[in-house]
Length: 78
Image (spheres, rainbow, N blue to C red):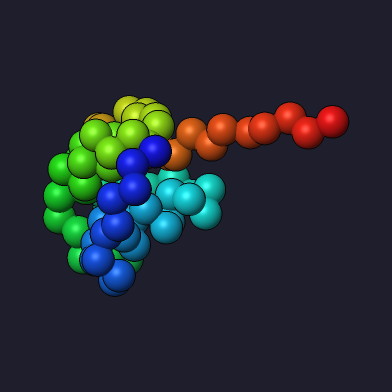
């Protein structure tokens, strides 16, 4: 994972925190909660930084949109 620090309060930082909390995010959620019109660009940059973000295409009636979720790595402890 990259050590890139996003400016506190920035859209990218807020979206990353949202994902790290185990939540998925859609463009509508990003717009409503963080004022982000370009979620795909933010996700692209986070992926470039090394975050493993899964994209799922959701079909809802005649609408189609992406849902993003951070794939967490779990360590087994014995």
